[in-house]
Length: 432
Image 1 (tube, rainbow, N blue to C red):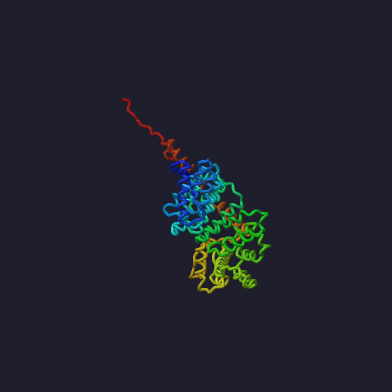
Image 2 (cartoon, rainbow, N blue to C red):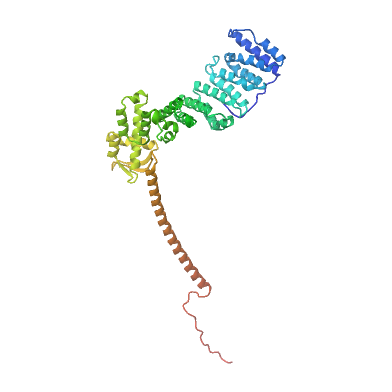
């Protein structure tokens, strides 16, 4: 896979290597009964005439036959071709054809063909300067190979470098969008729905304000919206509602936008009303109805928990009614919403209560900010009370310490703790 820039070291002059490669290509073409005569004499003549680019055009034009080479020879043959190309004044003009060849299957290696293609493409990528936008086309070829081979894990470690690569290439937003969409598709086909959704959102963010209503923007917006709705662990839809192209659906596709608003802030009853009003629409859109019902119940329970945050408890009977489920299924749904990370708490089977420790707000608006302000004021008052107690204790401590210091000073000054002076006694002494 792409790594630090490197160079290929191959012995021999460019003319000798070009002649050797042309002879090798002729043998492969002969084995495949390819049309046309041998290219080696023509390549040799062009090299002798110092017409390197013309000779390379001949080699590259016939390079697709390298995919038919024996498995153990493919990497070496392509490396030789890459090395010769790098000797040209403008090697980038030949690389797209190489990438095109490697994006196709390698019949001689049905099991390891994708790995061989990725090895060669990585070499091509790493021999190009980091700031050369040719790397963009090479990277797209790498993505095509990975998509066909479902080998996304090979690419994953390199994705941390993607933003820096795109900055170095100085590509336009349209090219960035192509990369993000290709990555989203590759990840989806490999079963990584989280990464797929991440790059789909990034692709939407490349759409300018002037283009939010065009056909491509609408198509991508609906794709992202449907992906978010059916995603098993995606519950916060503000990443969508913050995008201008998604807001544009309010006019271009009001039913889809209405469904988004329901999943953003409404309850299960509202979703059921939507299904009644637009009977059959969900099936027409090929959305997973069971997945939508499950997510809507989890979101409804999340809202109930947030609303009950002050009392810190939610009766089982309220949960069963809101989720339209049997009472015996309440605990299963509470466990599911805790596992989803939407709510924290514990079940009280004795009292038939869900004791809430923490809840998630689905929409954080003016009312929620007011609640936060109220809690902060309450905490501020509590902290002021604690601070006042600490100050009083500190004052008492300082008074006690001052008193003890005075007592110690009296002792050291000879007071010794006596209450009065000792009077001297008269003593008689003989004059003798």
